[in-house]
Figure 1 (cartoon, rainbow, N blue to C red):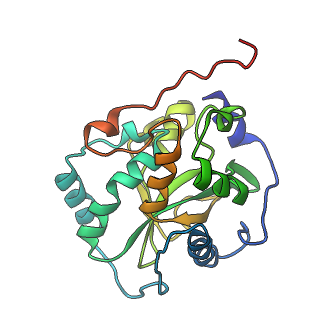
Figure 2 (figure 1 turned 60 degrees about the horizontal axis):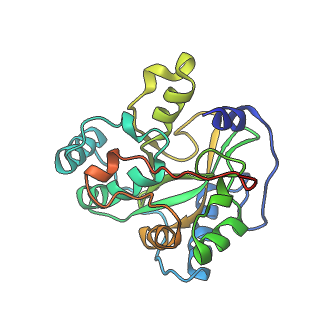
Length: 232
């Protein structure tokens, strides 16, 4: 928890020529498809599907009914697990493509989650390993859903903020946010880097710990592993 608060209020500069916080979301999204392909996974995108609007209250009610989920507050700190699990439900209800999206999250010029190109290149070869937790108490990436019509859905971030900063965000616990990338969360910016469930599942397969939900029960379990000090 303390490392998240530190990240949320500490300025750090991390950039890569392929992914840039100053680029348009869908420029980065297109590059995320290319990067995902370079890592060995094919995902197809033909651009934003314009003029496709939805009654999102109905969509969320339908997703909750089909998935059996009535409370999203347990998603705090579990962005990848919950986004991966709910992706097919949203895709079935929306009847258009919905992509699991993993990348960076910025608050103004502060990196809240800061995975690098090198991180993803390493994870696709070796998975996530204990060394990845030397500087962070949790996963150093954020996950959300990108809908073909240009809307993004963030299932967990408000619940995460409510858990670690209850004084400021307690009332937001369990709230799912959605909207156009540039407006969904004031002062924040999403930078997509990889897309698709297949690549996330491959990374989990290679990792020392399971972090995805393969059934409803898995949603409510938290990955735990004892990582001993090298000197112990």
